[in-house]
Image (cartoon, rainbow, N blue to C red; front, top):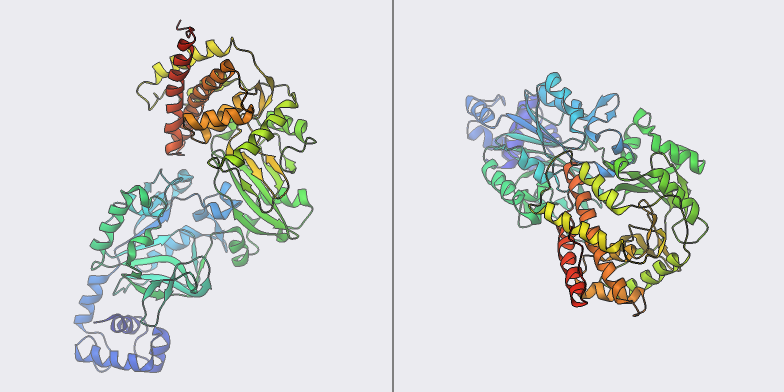
Amino acid sequence: MNIVDKSVLKKIYQFGKMSQRQLSNVCGFSLGKVNQSIQFLQKEGYIDDNWTLTNKSQDLIEAYKPKKAIILAAGLGMRMVPINTEVPKALLKVKNETLIERLILQLHEVGVTDITVVVGFMKEEFEFLIDEYHVHLVCNMDYARKNNLCSLAKSHSDLVNTYIVPCDIWCESNPFHACELYSWYMIKEERTDNSSVRLNKKYELVKTKSDEDSDTMIGISYISFEDAPQIARRIYAMADKREYEHSFWEDALYEKDKMVVAPYVFNGAYEVNTYEQLRDLDEDNETLNSHLMHIISDTLHCDLSEIVNIYPLKKGMTNRSFSFEVNSKRYIMRVPGEGTDKLINRRHEYDVYQVIKDEHICDPVIYMNPDNGYKITEYIEDAHACDASYFADVSDCMKKLKSFHDKKLVVHHTFEVFDELEKYESYWQGTPSIYRDYKETKKHIYELKAFVDTQPKEWGLSHIDSVPDNFLFSKDSLYLIDWEYAGMQDQHMDIAMFAIYSLYDRNDVETLIDLYFDGECDDMVRIKIYAYIAICGLLWSNWCEYKRNLGVEFGEYSLKQYRYAKEYYRIVKEELEERGMCLCTK
């Protein structure tokens, strides 16, 4: 029995006897194929002459009957900006019904009550589903750095006769059925640039080439007992490999360039993955009245409907940001990320922007809230960040940094690096460091403090977060952006910050210092910068440990920062010993 035969049998189960032409229309197959299928089903004893299903069909239907469902609801929903900062997208209301509750009720209608919901972001918001619908909640705390392949693996399901359902789909009618006779993946006959699959003439789902049109991937799928072992093995094997951390679970469905499951064309499904998709589907939705959208509207004196082309930007280490257009002009809005209120004094940041606003240093800021850190800036067209491996870029950045330092601007607060180091550690709330030798490393860093305290300083407003990503090249300007940590400090610390964020080795560090000082850096100043590299390495390592406890991981970056603390302590010690000097070890 092939897919056409099973599809025809399923439609007969749903609708009973009808004309072959009607059956052709509801199945989507030619009249000739439907006629052949009817003959086959009668010959093989699945239906009688009146198209009544036989016991053989009933046994088949029972074998393939849906048993359970897994709803994937762990992600941040970054494309849902700006709403994703206020509510998980699964709990968005569309036409007065939350997305996830509508999906659960549709599953219940076809007898599927064994439902697992994989949660992560705002996981506590889903707790009510346990009592209301008797679902099982599974937590994926890697939601911020891994894709939904990881979420599906966290379910530990065998996937036998299982629906896999993304949480951000709204279906006009129920897409699920009590009768499922094969594994399928749902698509919509709607051309899109955001898909990688198309339905071919053989009624197969194949990967598209760069010049081909794609059908819209909806993401709902059914996995039957026949295909479940193979697909489950692939999912769990891929989830164990780092190379698949950013993979969608659908990647496990492909064998070469073709999906191993059949297509299910369902044109009544709508993805609710962006603010604008929600607005198109339910223009009277009260959720559209996001307070962030009202800030934009009030600042730019425009209607909410004039805010268009909303896109999330790459998630930063501290904030989430998104771009948008009003009257054909693009802007960026920054929204502080998890735990940011403990890390950054927004009033201090606001004060810094007041000092630099007329200095032609940073990107144009048109709104900033000193209480919560929301910020709107003009979008710099055709801009790129500094490439830390391209030293022509780095040279320009060091000139910009030196020019800013030479202004000797003043604010009324200081970035006290050791106070911050201790503060970040206190946020671990008694949890020991993940590094076994942390106490010894910290002791060494305080030895470096005793050293740098005796050294001359270039005191003035310092950027502190002077990393390559914060140097923005445009056609005719170079901007130094994102002044969240800025304060009074030895400005040579900014050089160290650039080095450690760039993950520079020793040779690159020497090149960087020479670029800043035009090759004329005093030896003791150079050693002081080495000390800052070690000190700031432990500072940001502690910062990463705090963010890690919030479920935000930074991979190699966090490990490298801790290595800087240890390695550059040793370098400073050796450099001083060569000069007959030593570190204070009290």
